[in-house]
Image 1 (cartoon, one colour):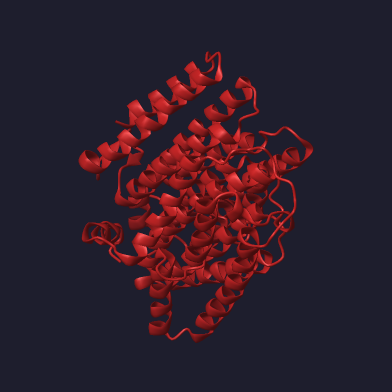
Image 2 (cartoon, rainbow, N blue to C red):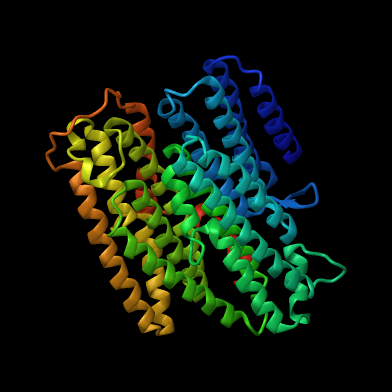
Length: 469
């Protein structure tokens, strides 16, 4: 199964080099996303729990993230067709080849069952994402690309040092997560503490949490907006999976509580930074990117406090993926219509697209965790666990920061949708089908807040049961 997926990916990318026009590029790319969705369904129905090619296991966490990726990446492709309407076929073809390779690298990261293999694949995502960021080939994108490569590569190098320290506890050099979970107690606990900090810092550039969160914000600003949706959801989830798997190998060690506290500190710092810049930015893409930093900070806190927080962290990742990708797709339409993403130059969007304006307002409300958002349910579970643990300082910080974020985001979204404007817009015709498709992601997150099927709850609980938590 996985061999076929990898071979199909490479074959389609290779054949795309021969695509002579835009129609052929679209047709060949569509084949990949159709195959990816087929593989996601087939894995769910027939292959959960299987290990293939020795280094990849279809566990529940990987399957969950891959299922979300198959939907978001396909919609990224669809929205990119209209968004990149002025590119030459060569530019459009290269962009689609990179999207396909990035999706493949992210998929492999989700399923990797080995610490070293995960590290290699995380670096692969850096290469493909960096070229996508440089798509416009201007000075601004060049600066963001070099920053992305430098910071991510530095982070990966730091994570490698952490892997070396953890490997000191490995038996016969076995770096699978299962083997490390059994062997880590035999290692030097000081080394294991330092190793986790190094890995957290390194992979924070992908999960977009403190301290290397800035690289993702800058990348999203200059990348084509549909690609920003994939980076802020699928790639961020790859960082989450990588950190989650390392975090869980510490669960039976005497330093697990210390490790948990490190995650809480990183989460609080991320929320503070995200909220601080949410109010200061004058660009809708930056605003959504800082929202990712804030939400991933909440996920880190959920992992750190344990208990209900672990379930809430996974639920938060799912809801965030749906809402954030839906919002980026909607903002892509806004950017094409107004020719800018600057907040002070975009007003009265409801006049041009009622459904799009409603979708953005609804998405902002759900993104801020107002009920019935799925994020509201996850944050409520995190608050419940904080109260159980009597960490009152943490409760005060989270509630205060979230209130500030609510004011900042809603204030900007209301301006976008309602404030009357006399500014000229472009001749771009809004894609109503695309608006409805992205609105569907936002509605799905709303449904998740109102109703979680029994099989869905059991699926997440099985993820946690795998680690006996």
